[in-house]
Image (cartoon, rainbow, N blue to C red; front, top):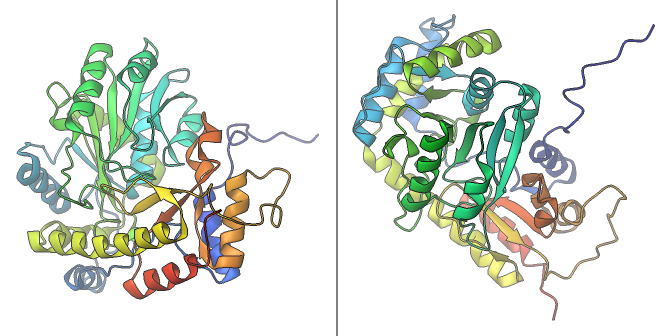
Length: 399
């Protein structure tokens, strides 16, 4: 008798972002799809990881992280937010931010609960909800500036709402949520007893004097927030898979149990190197923002020249651009089950030589809102960005 498989994966596909990286490899296109930073990892951090491996730091740590690394995270939060975090009970070190999000959703929800997600959104959040048996409820960010509409967010809350996922700085748009928007979210979370799951992995990548505010610092949200971040994006070590979740003791206790049985612990030598990373001087972050600003400007100038419109990112290292004015053969790579943006991604990789991510992969409820958009990342070397810009100039807007 043939047995059926579990149905929880039937709702979603493999990552479109990673698929576009493979398309780039196959076609020889410059990979501006997946967020693989190439700004260079600080030498002292690399040296610390190498030394830890050679010194024998290659076994399990405590499941929720080495005491030294948790202390470094706690000290970082004290310096940045003047927030006292107990490293013994309120910090869980995870295998990257993705695992932290999954562990939190599994730990803090019941099947049938609802989780509010802002659209467009990072593609992992929705399958995470489906695998946990909870319902994602989408709130579209408005217009070309991706503004939060107070009425839409108010209408999304109800007695079934258990979590709200907040990603700021935001992937894929580069939006940074304002203090006013965070106050609105905080008031609603307090009113309905909802926990904010704050993905702040891009917290240090900011432009034009924009300031990132952690929602945990909003009045009443101190014990209603799971703040998630990690080493990957800030220090250009995405392959190390080291993240963390900071939350109230009771929330952390539940997250730690899920984390323990999902992954046991994050890589030991990279936790050791993380201590060095978190103690880098302020000038490191200033230089990093300067480097990313240069790369951003190269991309935006190219998009201006070829006729794509976009929201200029306030943070992170992505641009969500509208290609609807571009002249191209929309039938050349068309397939029956592909959206227009998926066909354009194929075209731009094969004929232009730049790999991007179709915009609709960041939409689930409002799928059509992404069908004239593509996402670029600019976390590449300056020569790579210049080469990509030169290729993009082959595109032109309709007259």
